[in-house]
Length: 638
Ligand SMILES: O=C(O)c1ccc(O)c(O)c1
Ligand SMILES: [Mg+2]
Figure: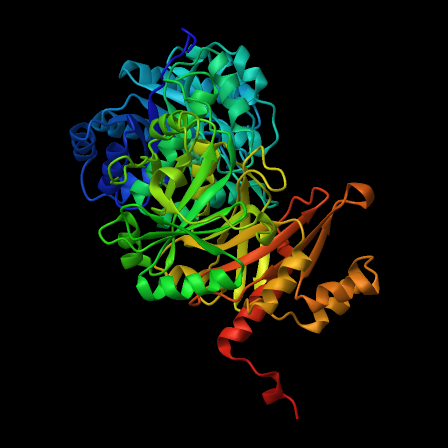
């Protein structure tokens, strides 16, 4: 840690959290924020006095960092000017009752506002002077849609011109970055003239900036704005005040306040550390792949699942030394079927039915990864272990799924040799799977940002662009998080899916399993055609693909008749990315779903194909829906 590292106070605006004002305060305090911004609307709708708010906050150990916003103040023609100064005095009374000394004035949006920075400066100087007499301060923020002032530099020029010690600048990453304005000059400002700093990110969307700001802001690291560069500039100025999250987001307004607050704090700790401050974070793990997936099953589900796995070419490779747990293996893929009573798996089974209850990532240093996760406020997990068995460190994903971290740095034997009675190895020629290519999860609506933040900050995964996939019964939004070192047959890839509709594959999964979870698992192979042909012969339930799909494929891609026929005979789907030599190919086949829950996929990546065959997801969802509904086209044909 450099000796210049500073820890900043962390604050959140009440507008970022759901609930009543006391609920918001309680959530912010419980999660560990130092302070809050009291958003005026939350006070107006609170059935108690500002002094009551002060008592509640101080009882929770929360500082009220600022009261905001005070709107449409500066550069108004008389007599509104005089009225605005009276209005300010009234709000100063409220601030003194609240016990905060700072108010945010956002730039005027009124058509009546005069386009004259000198008038704005004079008005703000007058307001600051009145505040000063009461020991209060005023901060001036440029709204991106302000009538005449919408950039931080304009606001700063006005603050400088007003030249009053009780008047300072407030910067908000959203307003600057949404206009594609350059924040780097903030580093040159005197840090003590910046009175407050608000941070928010947002996804890239094309819409008017006001609607974008009011509905789609999110926490730093959840969106696509360069918030880190903004923060670096702010901190280089010498600013030492709080870092505060100010997010207007329709989904956050509906989400449980504590979940949102936890994401917010995680985001701030990460941003502060990335800026070289705070107590520091150990580097993210290098994730080289998925060591195993664990399924929670009871005895009947284990019977059926092992049958499905056998049809896909897996064999029963081992039995746990002390628990009711079996290992199924093929080549580089390890699947664990856990029926142990009184375990995390059985708890998962009670809640969700047959499902993936744990993933294990292969990492370079599990202890370092756990230290990072802990610093980012993750929930850690310690499984009960038998004598001589390996304890594998683990943490909880936001949905409660366990993520084990396996490194073989100090071990002389693999986790399998440590904990399992292993049966005789089969010849590798009979095991064509290379590893787990990707693991797709279905998330409850409104939870995407939370998962993106978790995988991005804790593991350093990189979010890919958003896809919209048409299911016959609604739209699915999909975004993959990929470990930076992912190469074909290597690394971790996690597509995350959400759907507003309860009738889509994703929506049905979330309601059928009471929450988020693994929806499908894709296995990598070097030769999908041979594998699928062999497995179809062994009775594996690969989805039958409509002939129309192949007719269309012949038009889209330069495939000769032989190649096309080879795909068609084996129910293989196809995609290409890139152009010419640089292009890669993707061959894949899906199974029908197990108990209408999860399913498997076999994939072959050729020539550096980087995607997930999303263009074919609609075909898969339609075929699965037809199988599920028992659709029979002949009923509709005369
Ligand atoms: O959307 C608004 O009006 C609004 C108000 C206050 C702020 O600090 C802000 O960034 C936006
Ligand atoms: Mg703001």
